[in-house]
Structures are given as structure tokens and as C-alpha cells.
Length: 101
Image (cartoon, rainbow, N blue to C red; front, side, top):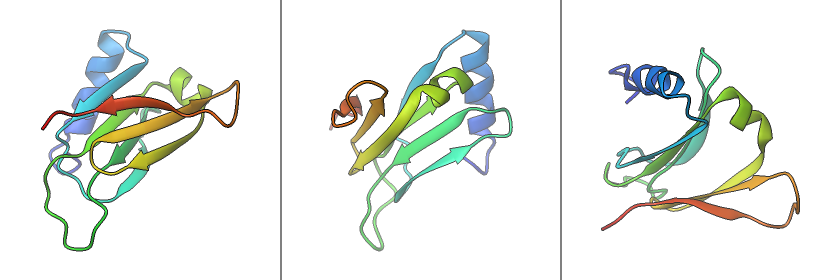
């Protein structure tokens, strides 16, 4: 998604439809991490974490600037689930995105 500029297109569509959080499946990325886009959106991604992992599956969440500021923390759980933590009870995580087999 990075090389083709798809993240910029997704961010543009999020703003156009006034979305705060957008779940993205089948990202085909490995590892887990986060990237802040030049436009202010935050991209959280989770994929296979093994060495030499296949570029299959993977999920991501794109957060608007407002949603990004509400995020306290997040955890990756493999290539199919991301959990987030927003304000409130700091010991509670909420599943945000799962993909199908």
C-alpha cells in the first residue's frame, strides 16, 4: 500500500466521508507497527510476525486526527486482530478488527 500511494487515497476518502476510524483487511504486510501520515491520520497495522512470513492476510486501522488523539494504546494479535485502548479503564482492551479465513 505504501508504494502505490493507496494510503493517501484511503485517507482522502476517509475525510470525504467524514469517518473517524476505518478498518482495512488483507493488507498483506508483515510485522506490526504504526505510521503517521503527512495529513495527520494514523495507520496501525498488524500482520504475520514470523521471520520470512508470507505477505498474506494482515489488518490495519486508519484513525482520523481526532480518533488518534483519543487512542491510549493498542496491541497486535497476529495477522487478524488489532485491539485498542481508549481512555477509561487502562486495563481494558477492545477488539477492533478481525478478518475472515
